Image 1: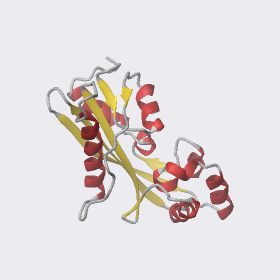
Image 2: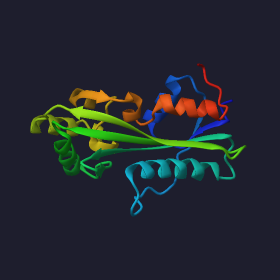
Image 3: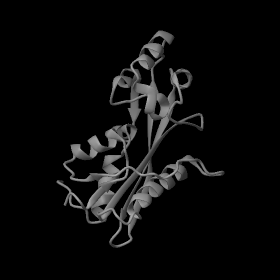
Length: 195
């Protein structure tokens, strides 16, 4: 069934999460544009982008597959969306903002069944607390290169875990794909899972 399931994402973390639960799938990165619409809530934003990404790949004529998974993850601190840092200076600014505080990680997912037209989508939230970070720790972390392509400038599945004092909610959601909620949606759409 490898050709039936398609992950519309270039994220190696999302690919690893789906492999972790024994799924066979194709990876076809989406070319959907990522931007915030005026008046859009963070929850609406991640769900819309997840749907856009899944639909963009599903609508390509030359792609085989039945089910398409799209996802988007953002970090929220004081209602401000913290995306991927543009450079090391911005990464440092973001990490200083998160230092010693709580923030929220929102991941949207969408699963589209191209055969039936049915779809499932949702935004899932996880609360994350950082311990206080020193400037030396922030600079050393940035020097590893890990913050470069990560929402909120950290990777909980990497060295960034050293900064996390507590989480409330789904760990995989912070990595980039809320597996518990996603697998329930997949079952509803008839996708065969190991459990």
